[in-house]
Length: 293
Image 1 (spheres, one colour):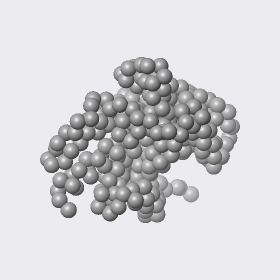
Image 2: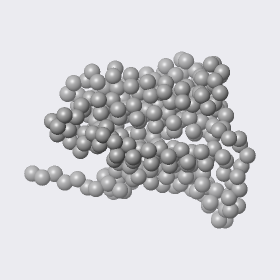
Image 3: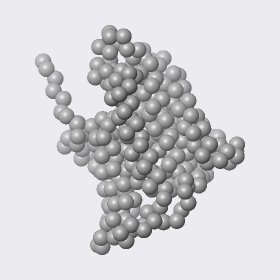
Image 4: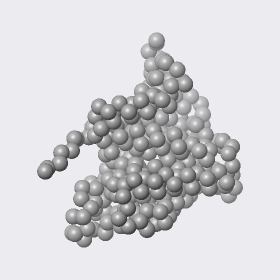
């Protein structure tokens, strides 16, 4: 196997892994703020691409205007999901919350199918599709957009959580929701913020990947599951650990598909997930928890 082929697979894997990282961070933000694993997260990825298509083809907006409109529309969908599906539940068990998010995922996917049909749709790339040569490998400009936007979001995410009042309040809820409420933090508002942020991040992931993979009503299923794998690898951290987990997953998946068989591409992610859960359930970068009795 030649070096340029390895490099080609690795570059493709990094851009794919960046998408998994964004989705995984969305999973982690909601989990840390609420204790909920939101299995509807992948549907907000789908909505980002489909809303962009709506604003481009139906409302005839230019791409630069359609993208922020799609992010806003997807964020509103996340807000409504929290208000209508999560907020009304009182003293719900974790399994009930998981079932609610799965039901929400099915509902959103069904509504998308009725609205946009079952066809696969294409979104134009942000800056052309002429490949760029790098050390014998080639990469599309859209891959660079994916990597750059991921880096920017990770930086903004860290600034928000460590240098703003609301970000610190969300971190306090992640550590101990009851204690956060006792010191005056509005826990319900922090939960709402977590859904708003995660749905916005999911929609951005869906928008930037759509020019490469195209979009359809059901693309969120697999992307959401792989983002969940990235979150597990990162120990459900909303920081750099999940980003590293997503990049690692994307590179291993791409190398496995190129060196072994593309038929195993999806299986590789879930094999990695099972290995992590069996060998190190707290994630590669998470700390084992101990309970004092």
